[in-house]
Length: 263
Image 1 (cartoon, one colour):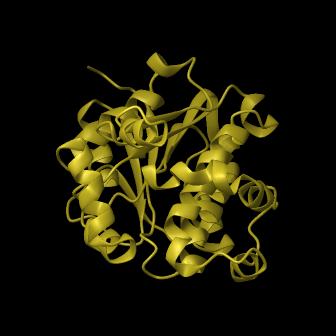
Image 2: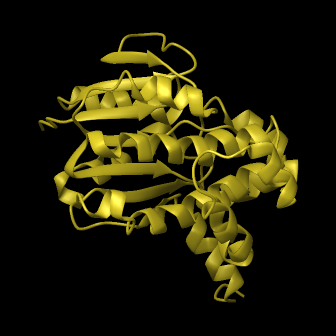
Image 3: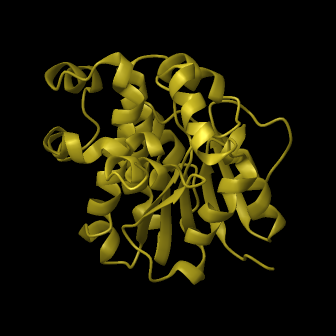
């Protein structure tokens, strides 16, 4: 299968980002990879970049060509470093990169955000989430975290709650919608990547082990990358503002418990 597109992928040094880049390149895409760390082997063009600050985002955008087909926002922090850097990368940096690259994404192109089953609880926090995603630009993240009382221990799941609600909002924002740019999300469950150990430290072994038990096994990068690239493809041209739970049935299991279906 030929996948003749130019795709920007963040977080290409390891895990889901690396596998997405490998698969895209193998299908014929021109890959532009971004990471703070250099990949161990070459996959298309590589840009050393850090999206945790406005200056870092601007430096990355300046190196991206004038026409691309898709942006895959895969890079993210586990929450181990605290709420401020986690929100800076997982939401504000990702959003700033998406907005800055919008003029370079072709009409009918795609943005894919890698969220998480950890963002499942956004409905319970909807007012706080709405307030933060309504903040324009790239703010002083430390001030935002303090003003909205975002605790370090919930930095990761809260960052994904922000991302999921923003995905729905962005799909209907003029900067994207006027040019037919689709904005979607993929939410993995527990995935065997280098960052899983950090998730165990942040979320706890009990939570991670329970999630894995619900699905029968942890996922892997090969499970997630095809879904990301499907959303980049013309086969997903009528999917917009959606979140695909690529989690082995974990979200369904949680819903079944919440609704009492498995009692």
